[in-house]
Length: 111
Length: 463
Image (tube, rainbow over all chains, first blue to last red):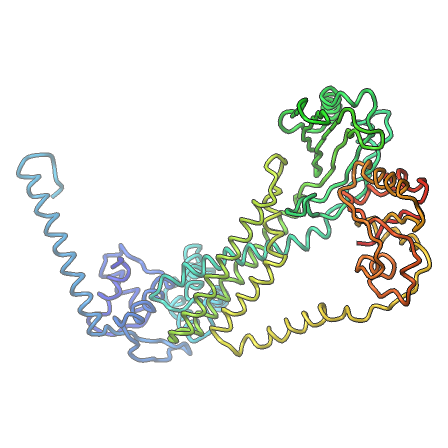
């Protein structure tokens, strides 16, 4: 799973959001590290919709412009769950290795 | 401010296929934009073009369609470049009247040949295509018979006149064969022109046979603007290929059989195009010739018979995606075929009484065909000598003799393709049909043959 995909699923996990809502939420959740471009976001949404991981929720019209909301499907939630587990395992492995490095006194490790 | 920004975003969003997504994205983009933004950032623009073109292909989760679209674009780009090049070559400059060049290569000698040529001509054996050229030559004198020394002299004179000499002088001498032969040649180029010098000498031949000649051919190299034209055509073709692939993909999305059929056809079209261009270029390529000839020969193939097959396959691919959209194209195509193919039925018959009149110069300017008419009562020896004289001319490649008035060649020679009425064909002169290396060879043929006993006429024929 690529990083934008991961963040989009994460942003949609608690509630349906529209495009701008997803972009804002991803920026907030990643502490500003990830700023999604509109093209990237909608390409990912189309792909996730085709894979059945997200779906359209509802449409509103604000300032004369259509605003479509997307929500996570249960498959999407499972996929995010699996990815989170995978990342957690990776983080655990790296943490253990760094701890070992510290123990053997092989050099400084930050914090 | 927002209105102008919205207009610019809307313009970029045209990369996306028509539909509600454009409006939805416009809303998102405007919401994202800080209040002082007047134009999309470069990053945004690139992002929208990239993913917009991807969205045109439909099938958002698929990668095969992206690969196919890229290959179709490559193929259609080649086709676009080929079409543009074909058109461009029509405006290629004529081969120059090369009086100065003649004096440089063959000082003080009478030079035969010259003239103009079509951009592309079939090679001597008819197997390949090459850049059209004008043949220039001198009959051997004492000086030119030493082909190595004469070629070296010509090379040095050309270099002094500002020509670039390409590669080394090649010399081949064969003392074991009969007749003993010696051959020397080199390549030279100048702005827009390519010259191939070749001097051949055969020793001890019969008086009526050629002992060779010192010669050169002059052809064009592709003008610089033609490259620009071809690249522009290629870019337009590539974009058209991408959009067409997207169109077909979106319309066949969700239909398994149609997708598979259209995809298979598209793959075949792509492979055929790449194969034809590559093989066509390499097949005719003369690696010794300086310049980028191979590119233009490859593109040339795509606008020939291979192009028709490719167009047919592409149409089938589109028809597989959506049948009814292709019907107008098929109707137009059928109309074109009907208009060009089936109007040759009514060429008037005629009653010739002698050799045809000289054709207007403009109709034979680029023709490499000539006919030599010989009286029916010419003796066998007169005919043999005439045939030897035809063969003596450096620029004649091959000839055939025609004496049967029911031959297609008789209709072409005497009636512009029409039928000869009654027994009129029985009384008109026999003739040789001669293929010349370049159109400018004709005056030399005329000078060599016309005065011989039994010869009635020598005519440059419209090809």
